[in-house]
Length: 68
Length: 256
Image (cartoon, rainbow over all chains, first blue to last red; front, top):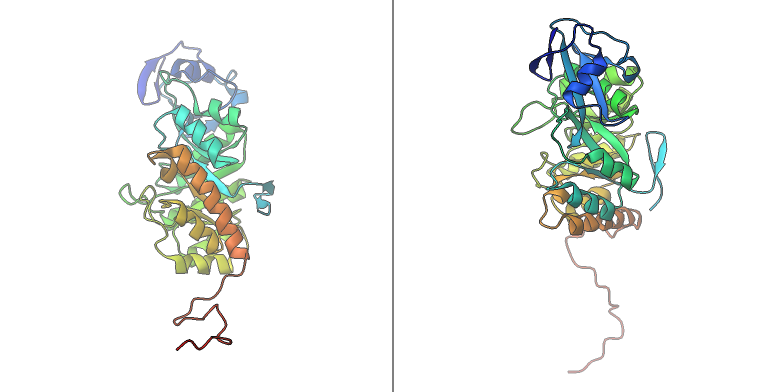
């Protein structure tokens, strides 16, 4: 399936979960400091492995940077 | 310095430092250590798989608290969503709420800011709002349940110091929550002045991160916040138009 991941259209497996999108975005390096929104709504870390993605969903994988 | 009560916790340092603007993580780490800060702000952006090193690694090594910031948000909706993301990413309810009106001045959009603050307080966040130096806005934010009010001295990164010290004094006078001067500090005397005006703390970033010698400026800021704190409580002499001799007039010899 095709989803929009951090602004790019990418192809993931048809049964891809949120965790797969996180890994694809390079956000799976540590146990904290990363969060995910699907179509604008936060998906808690505890649900990443469980929640399946659907075609055309907009996924944003964000992490901490210098700033603020 | 007396302990700083903020957000239900007790802190030793009254200086909060942003992580933005440092030329390298190494420089950032050295400067943050020199500042004595216990709270540093971080922003949230799309993950970059090519990034080397991580700001969080430095923060963990220093043992300081990472305060997420909704930097880059122009609407209450975006700020609220960013805060929720930050809550999940950092496992904290604390958020520095920044909702700006335009990218040239980076001045807060008061209307969106109050809206976002009300929503986030309702959702259980400990909200520290970056605000204009407007006493009415400060009162609104306090009434909304924010844990502090953070009026700017002047625009972010401008180094222009405290443009309206009178408004800062009014905000300090009426606030029942901590007042933290946030934005526009340029050098140590600005930070000291903020504390002399009665602020409970100072939040700064560019004045340290973009200084030629960030570690040295961080040390200066630490001392400035402490000295301003002490001076405020030392009962200064009033400003006079005329002189007041410090040497007694009696006993002057006649030598002519």
